[in-house]
Length: 305
Image (cartoon, rainbow, N blue to C red; front, top):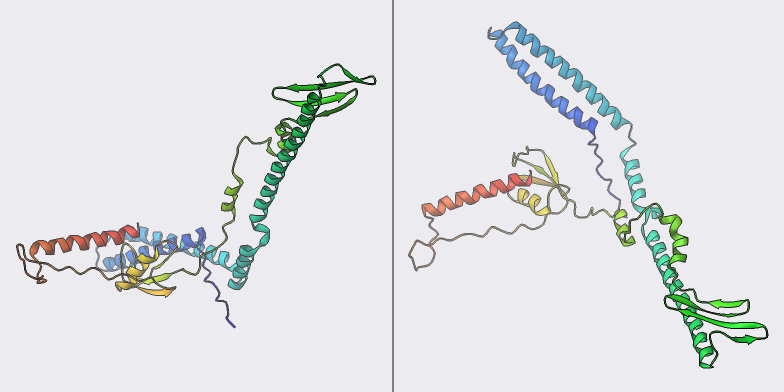
């Protein structure tokens, strides 16, 4: 039986960020205070300067303590990691959020409207068929009476045909758009926009690609990042993360790295030589290598920009 691994739960809220920032500020000021104390012992600093810095340290310590307390309280108010993970899983699998049911309803509306148009057209064709049949029998559009009831045939460009016999009447429906408009108007009167319902698929993107997640930890300072910083596929493409590990600049913490192709090895031939490559680099070639290395370093920095 396979046990599901509990995801890593971290809180990176504004309060947590403030606590981290104020702590860093405090550390900087405390370092300056230590240096100032050493200078004070040597008589190289004015008393008021030391007092000002000391007050700044105390204020920074107060801010850091309050910010950390707020961050701790925020984290303490959260349930345990297992409950959070279970709740998120419930959200990601809740069938009531599936947009497919809405799209199916739109399909049903589309099918109903298409069927309505077909049925109405078929009936109109039947009315026109009777108009033609009566006329083929030689019955005029006006003047023929059945007992005391006159048979009348009405046709016109752009209008539905009709046949009346006294008070009895059959007429085509003609254009059904106004009738459809009467039904749907309560639902669309507040907007003039027209949007394809298939675009609603973007409202339900709960599938998480967790299988390819990669996490690494830098082992040296590189590209503006410090040793110990963690990088993931949330901010960097897998090949970049793999290149850091491949060059010994980071260690893999989670996931599987893609293969990194070996760099192409250059061979050099002396200018004007028609012999096999000797591998000896000229000064110009050495300068070009330095340029290439600088470009690679800039690419690394750009990855963190």
